[in-house]
Length: 317
Image (cartoon, rainbow, N blue to C red; front, top):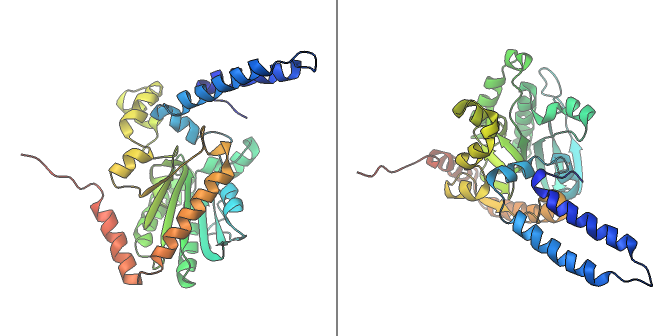
């Protein structure tokens, strides 16, 4: 498993424990020393993972082994039928979606998809959607609205693709239209930030009635590196930028931008994807049961009120 810099002391201790296990024999028992090191390892994990900086948590959100949208779909859904294309230009593989069933509840799942290796990352464009990806997402939301099924948006992108081709095909307009049109979709929408929630790329499928965020995911107007490049003229200041951006769930709950934090196991979602998927499934089904009691107009009114209230402040004399 890939190891981040701040996790290396944990890896070193795990290697020592494995070496001792291999050295042990019936005549020489090393069990007392192994138990001592295992106790030390548990304490070290708690010390490191329970005291991570904002920047370290950003690194966890980007971990190459972290579950992506397709991983969660396979863990959450009993059935999944992927749908393709925006009916205008092409099928963007950085944005996937389709009908699914979660414990009998029919839903439309839409989300960014990254790749596991170089070949797949090129194919998926590193999870950075083009305009056709956002148009496909809206086409699927309209389909969900037609069949009166709720929508689940899984957000995991460093940002929308900023290339010339994407700009020529109307990247900004595609995202802006999604922001406008999602506000009027007459079916419940739940958004989940599962990894990176970067800028307009995340917002393009982020207008929702209920916003969940995984414990070590982040949601921000800009990446820490981008912010550091603007404010300090150096991406090396990304750790300071991550602290200043207040981009994790605990801060976003206070700002009333997200509604609920989904806990992750010690070390991140990649340590136990099944446990995270179960917690997410429970939260989604609970929300959809609550939303089913609302009329279409009440749903739209609540969504409008939610977004109008973001950014409110009171000036003190």
